[in-house]
Length: 218
Image (cartoon, rainbow, N blue to C red; front, top):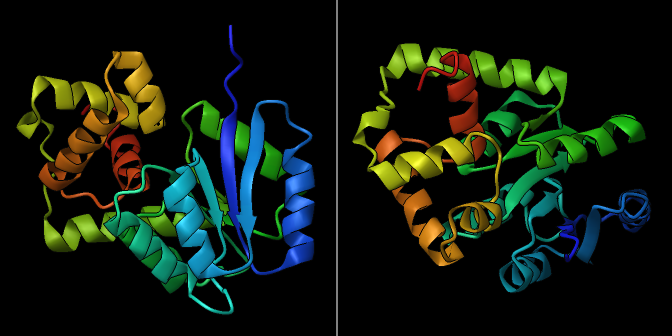
């Protein structure tokens, strides 16, 4: 039986940090760095070509802002889980990343063992967020619900969409959902897009945070 590895693309314009992160990831047999770049435009090209399971994306890039890269990739319906990996703990950066479609937000000053643990946890369907980041996001989500009265009615979903929704909030990637349901990945992408539209979500992270806040009663 073929051993499945979680594929990762690194987009960061600091060569030494990028090399250190790659070496750290390579100590884990279940992960494989399949691409890396220090240029935003090249990162976009690699993301579209490789569609890795995870993209680790810096915000403060020299040529293209990481949040603009995120917007572009989400507009292209890239199925990768995009994790912002940055020094910025600015609330506006965190909220903008969430609203733009980031699937996680990690700070670069975290301990190496915590970073590896975060990557391992994403395989188990958990959110990739630092503690302080999660508090900012949860507070934002509570305020957003109160001010917009936005509804997320899962009853709008078809039976198949609801099935995929339950796998999404468990953290499964499009590839793994396709494998679980024995359907092609392109079909999963269509359903995911429809789920986001019906439930008024822009990212898996936003949807999963709401799901956890609702007490898993969706």
